[in-house]
Amino acid sequence: MTVLTKLRSLNASASVPAKRPRRISVLGATGSIGESTLDLIGRDPASFEVVALTGGRNVARLVELAVRHRAELAVIADEAHYAELREALAGTGIEVAAGRGALVEAAGRPADWVMAAIVGAAGLEPTLAAVRQGTVTALANKECLVSAGTIFMAEVARHKTTLLPVDSEHCAALQVMAGTPSEGIERVCLTASGGPFRSWSLAEMADVQPEQALKHPNWSMGPKVTLDSATLMNKGLELIEAHHLFSLSADQLDVLIHPQSIVHCLVSYRDGSVLAQLSCPDMRTPIAYSLAWPERMHVPNERLDLAKLGALTFAAPDEVRFPALRVAKAALAAGGSATTVLNAANEVAVEAFFARIIKFLEIASLVEATLDAASDLVSLKAASVEDVLAIDAAARARAKSLLGRFASARPAG
Ligand code: NAD
Ligand code: MG
Image (tube, rainbow, N blue to C red):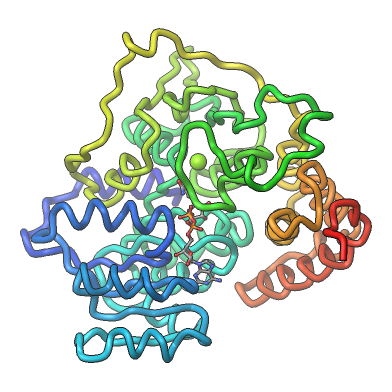
């Protein structure tokens, strides 16, 4: 059962739950999506009770959020920060824990709703713990699906979990498709802003610095997804995400460059109709959709004024200047464990770019070189999450071993 079929049947029978506060957890609470989620929750505190909040390393922010939202549990992923967290929350009555096991436990704590907003494949096991608990899961962490889509969706089905995509394009797709039978759908087109280098030449992009790549024209997001948006790898990851969420084949999926980021997804039907979802670029809109589902909640963000905007523009993506999109599409077409390898190699490449070890254009080159060098891993068929994690680890090692090829940007000394 796809996300869509499941939601249609739930929507049909959805009754408004008794008005008790919804118990919610936020994985990745200190990040961009986590903060936006807690911003919405903080505006209506009577409707929510916060169960668990987790963060990677930022203890100070996790402490502030846990106290402000009266969380039951605060978990820091990096065990080196455990003592600091325990000390800061002593006497508050908030439980504290640290490490990967604690993250998984926090995610599996009984709750009505969980936001999965850890960045990268590090979010896979905690998110799966929420899915296996049957908690309504708002999924921001696209890497879960890129790395382990088949297994992840099988777990969603097995536990009859309601999965609500938070990625703006996928949330848009869900909203558009919810009222139409899937057989009528011909194509689903995800839009991309094109990022800060949309109109730059390859020569101009050769010397892009991390600070430049972190300036997204429309969206305010965490560093990895901002960089992924600048290379267009993000749109490649999102095609793979859509493939798993909506059971769409690669040739039913498309990308359009749309610099204004107002139309998030267009769905074409066999009668020639094209339906789209529009909103100003603010992640609180898709987050609110998943938070209030099956109802709608008020979001105090900018309202769309098309007369003021005047024009919306669209163009085909350029896979020569943005080869990451081509590489991701090829991984989706290759099947096997290609997308697991793609995701792992991209995480290594992103880190290496931020560390100024490789250059901007070398991100896609490193990912492609890893896929080429790892045909043994690509051909593996993962039967379990453990298999996926082993392939992910091997692919990271392979990508790191190839970094030397791209030593050009390595800092001197
Ligand atoms: P972010 O970097 O701002 O936040 C990531 C969160 O994960 C932080 O709380 C961080 O502390 C935590 N974290 C990092 N490494 C961790 C680890 N190893 N173990 C446990 N926790 C760890 O990222 P973000 O922009 O909020 O994005 C989160 C996810 O949502 C990503 O998968 C991203 O692709 C997706 N997403 C984000 C946006 C957006 O607007 N920010 C839009 C669509 C999708
Ligand atoms: Mg997106």
